[in-house]
Image (cartoon, rainbow, N blue to C red; front, side, top):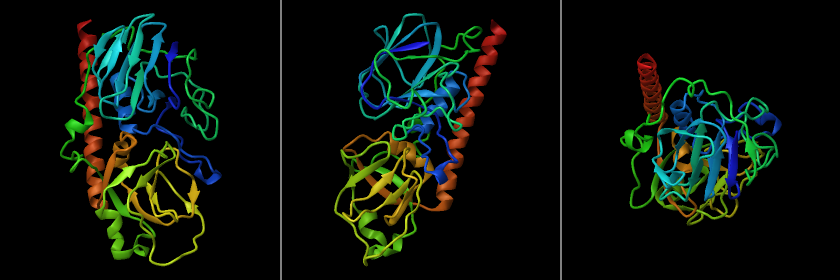
Length: 331
């Protein structure tokens, strides 16, 4: 069991989401940075889809009620256990009564706490993710609050392996050739032209050429982008159609909306582009006010990035298993 000692709004229980229900109006939800969830769960010996805590408002703290293996992934620092500074992307063991405190990270937006055994939360429609708009899943369909107590599943690692210190090189560093850094202060986000792209003047040049800023009117449902408005060359009437995370729609005001983890299931605004799946985690770690530059990609490039990510995850999994086998043999 863990107890929440301090929490701001919108901190929730998430996993990798609940796909398969969009046809009945249920958003997939899930972590804004699924990459961090997968790696954190591997570090503590869980299935990659185990439920974790997504922290996006700080400070946040929790108390461990029993000896627990945990890892903090995603954001970049300002983590401590009973006053001792910890590093992200590393597994630790907490003792009963110890308190994990997380302050606002230096650069990134969201941190994820994975615990050995996963959070023992009821499964709703195949997932433990919180749907804030629907009011179900996760912690009774609501954000975490001071005093909440969350059960933790049985951790098979804790009884036999001293896993503290097992760490990985974070994806942004290990895959720097795949995920280039900011260009003139703007995060490059790769996207493909979408269904109504050709309705925008100059092959959508105004969308691709300018730098956009994430508006304060953004949340887990969608990022509203501030910039020079773009509009179709002709007025069109569209029927509502299915949308998924990554779709970039353009409402009448001309400032795009990027659908995120709690994306609407349908909408009628024209679609100018769609973010490639492997770049969605970078959006999930971008703060309000961050600057973005969309880079026109190809299906071949998207597939190559997907393969590089898969190799990284497999390498982390394989290395983790090798270290744990070696430790077990020495015990």
